[in-house]
Image 1 (cartoon, rainbow, N blue to C red):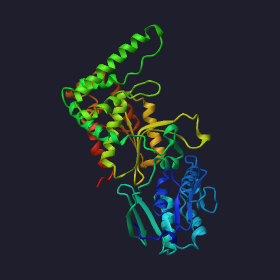
Image 2: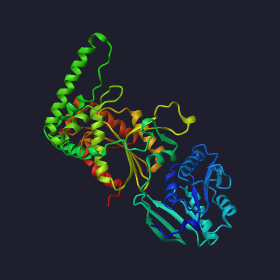
Image 3: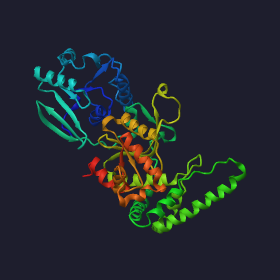
Image 4: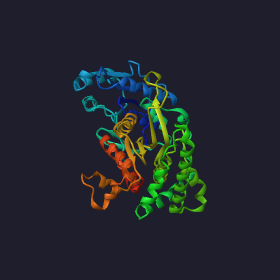
Length: 435
C-alpha cells in the first residue's frame, strides 16, 4: 500500500475514452483527495469528452464520491480542440488554475501527449517540488508515482472489488435484462466438471476419435424444427429428438467422465434457450473456456460473468430495450483490464465479430481485448491461416468444419485474436500476471 497521504493533494486527471485509468487511483486512495480537477477537450469532431466525464461522475457518485461534477466549470479545465497541440496555451490554463495551489497529484495516464508535456513543463518551470506525477502501468499493475523526476512509489494497485458493471458504466453501458444483478451467472460447482471435460476433450481431439466427437457435438447445435408445416412437424420432432439422444449417448461414451458428473453432463448436453434453440455445444464450449480461465486466474480476477448482455446506459442512446451485444465471457482483472471472449462452436457472422471488437474497445479502450475461442487446437488454427492448407490438415476442408472456418475468418478480418482450446493457459498467462 502506498504511503502517500492523498488527503493532502489535489487530484488532476485528463479526460479519456478509457475512464478506468482515472477511476482506479481515486478508488485506490478511497476518493480522499482535497479536490478533483479534470482537463477536458471541447469542440472535437472525433471525441465526446463531456459524455465520458459524465460517465465518470455517475460512477463516483454511486460510490459516495460527490466532489466531482462534469459540468462544473471550475473543476473542468477546457481546452479547445484547435489548441490541443499548443503547449503554451495549455500551460496558460494550468497557470491560471494552479499557480496558487500546492501539492497536486497529476494522473497523466489518460492524457494526450501535448497535455502531458504541458504538465511536465508547468511543474519544471514553476519549481513545483511537492507535486506528484502518477502513471498506471497496466501490464504489472503498478501505480508509478514520480516526485522531482524520481520514482517515490511503485505500489501494486490491484483492487479486489472492481465490478464489470462499473467498467460498463464508465463507458456509458449497463448490464441488460436479467443479468443486471450483481450475482454471478455461472455455477462454481461446475468448475471441476468442466476442467475434467476439457482434459478429455483435448485428448480426444488429438486422437482418431476427434471426428466422431465433433460430429455428435455439432448435432447438439441444431435448433428445434420449425412448427411449419404442421403436417410433418411431429415426424421431424421425433427424428430430431432421436438424433439428439443418440448423439448424447455417444458423447458420454467417448468422454467417459467420472460417474459423479453424470447429472451435470446430462444437464449441459441439453442446455436450452427460451426460444427452444438448443445450441448446446456453444454453451459447452463457453463452459470449457470460462471455467478454465476462472481456474487459472481466479486470484487475479476482480469480476467474471458468462453470457453478459449489455445496452446503453442512457435512455436517449438506446434504439430499443433489447441488448446491443452479448459477451459469452466478460472478465475484469483487478488492475482494470477488460477482456471479452466469444466462444463459437458454429458460425459467427462478420458483423458479430465487428460488434464484439467495438463493444470491447468501447468499454475499455485500447486496454480492452476481444478474443474468439474455437473448438479447434492451436496448430489447426495456424494451418487455416495459411493460403494453402498443409497436407496433414486437409481434413479441415470437410463440411463438418465449415461453420468453424467461417467464424475464424470473420474474427481475423475483424481484428479479434483467435485461440484454440489447448492454448488458453498459455494465453491467459501472457495477458494476466499469474505470479
